[in-house]
Image (cartoon, rainbow, N blue to C red):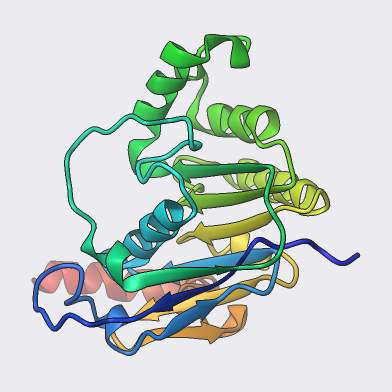
Length: 241
């Protein structure tokens, strides 16, 4: 099956030399472009390294609310300028998505409230009345229509292993319906999605990598392979502090 994609590249043209955020992020120093040529692309890396900043910028470039939702969700919980937008340019495939959505774990509570106030008929009950895993599953299964461009920022937050696996199945079903995903995550489970592209963010910049070579995969593998020695050392170091 030849999947239809919508965002081909984000080109970064930095004309500003500054030590102020976000231009002081090490991930931006050597960035020229990000290429999206698979239905699912993952952004991984430590907290504070710039994943969410890039994710929010991509959302805005694609006409989405930077705090989450669709083009029709216009809520904002704080006022902030986004100078990075002026330095970035999207390059699209010659396809037009019929749907688009930005799930952002950090502001999901505000998004649920906005949905409840503006389109209460969309769900059988308020998303606030579900658990985090149930509400995300309900959002994806009910609101993600396919033929769409979807951005997920840390969707694994609050999800059990089984719910993460269910999410992967829903993503696969939407990929079969000509959808494209960009996902920022800390989950080693989601990285097992077949044929996904992985960009790892670090102090050295942003580079494409394989799942087995990522820091998060190697750290979890080390813990499971050497669990007794690892935790003995961890708690011994704590006692010595």
